[in-house]
Image 1: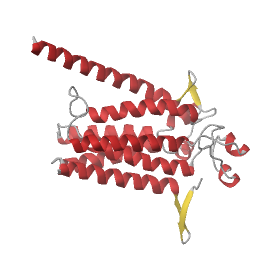
Image 2: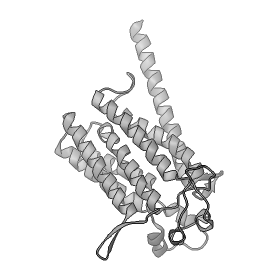
Image 3: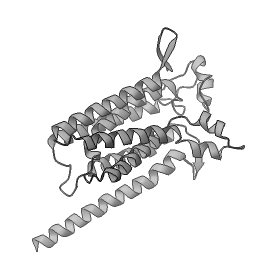
Length: 268
């Protein structure tokens, strides 16, 4: 692990921040390229993307508020600012809210998720490399690709017993990065093809499908991430993505059923 990627003079360039910035730039570049190729580039889209970035930056910073508030002792504003951290799920939620609010403000009617989602998936995959280099890896494992943390780095990581004992741990962030890279490759192919994966899908469904697949994967990978259990034997992230998965799965099942019913009615 390498929390400091490199130094420029007396300035340390942190791995987490560097890869998050790189991932964000890649996501923006990919989204704009797809928008230009599909004839969707406009000033309105730029405002929407900017609002999404602002929402992501805000909620990713304070996405761990609930966990901090539930810890023993009295919560304080200073403690919140110190503990805040960064959370991907908070960033995704903030980006979604920012986009929705801006669309309503400028009265933009079309969905934009399908344009942006291939780059978003690739950008998150890149950002997760920074998480791997700077954060607690995962739960202990006997698998040959388990990673160990040096004593110098272990002393700076919070709630990581495996780090202190020198145990090999799951590289959980790399699991996520590999999954998202493969998913991004498929999303780019779908985007270049110019048609949705299924005939019953509509504009905006590609983004919802990404959220469904990511929610399922995130629920599973949390078992080897080692995040604190909050309720029912599940982590806070699992408690968030599980209802999201159920809601999205219900949406797709209902959409396909309605499309099938309409097709049967038209045939008769």
